[in-house]
Length: 478
Image (cartoon, rainbow, N blue to C red):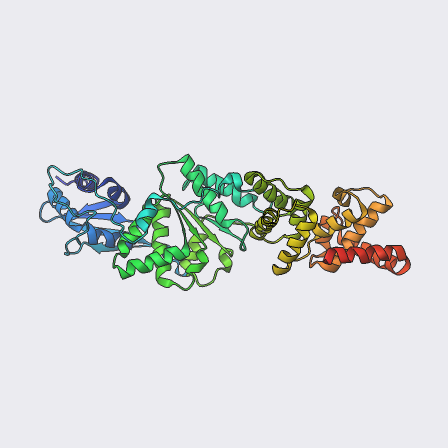
């Protein structure tokens, strides 16, 4: 009577399950699918060539013994592997490997006396022995301060934050896998990555979450090569449920490390484990990463973090002050937010500088103190004048609320303030006429041109107005 291949493999699994620990069984045997049984040759499908090599290195003795028990001394094993073919976008193809005649390499995690009739439930520890990483398995390396509660949402980051929150609610099960977050430095990539990890741990305490920057990953791989335990290195990363890799661009031109990460990525993705990756560039702009790995970065969602707008910058400062239990005058907060526009890290650094100066010298936090501190800070960080900052200076100069810039009123004094804001924005920023108009009451580029022409005419014909312009110019570029 011909045996059913599925039942044969199921019987093999029952024996194997009793002879290795639960995690190893889940990692290395649950993904296997039986394909067919012909002439006492059982064909099983495995996810990758690495998977096949690992089984042959570590479990071949166990596999042979179980198969011999099911099919007799003539029983043999053959592997089927579906290979990805990224060359010329061709379809995947299947290759077959016969089992080898080698014996399993001794490995403390799986080598143990095997009783095929009785079995053993002895729990064996994870084999990963690279210095420093044993601790990582227990500790996720997540920074508790980088939570969603401390991440201020704005138009600049709404897509990335929403996607990150969705991933944290259902890791590995959304279409955002991998989730690639990219931006220039200091805009919150690392904060958001940690926030996702912390939220996952909060929602799913049993999941293994690991944050690691790419330089750590590279150094760990180099150590594994030196110690001749690359398989343990890969196995360790393949049991992670949620893997957060920071600054993936540092893998550029490191071919061997990329190849290892490629296998880890494939395994985690196939097992519906979540990957979160950060980069300082969009996938299309990353150089030095091989094509097949870059293509996988595009499987999920790539979301960017942009420079925060004025309201978001003010909210960031207020949140930090509230968290630290510190009060600061509103005009000082606004001055900071108007002057430091390109980088959240610099914005928070300037805030800390003011607080330190006030505390050490026992001085009250005033606008004058902020100006002295920030003028030095801004010069060191090459401040770029923004449209928001110009509007603030112009409105303060004439004693008007900032909202009048965007109002529809046609009062002469309001129109003149709006025209001055447009004039200085064109003169002192690199913004287009359309962008300036958008920030000044949603006007078109023709209105901006007309405003600039009007201001130039008044400078030539009105002495008082010319004094206004000269004083404003000094205040803005100070």
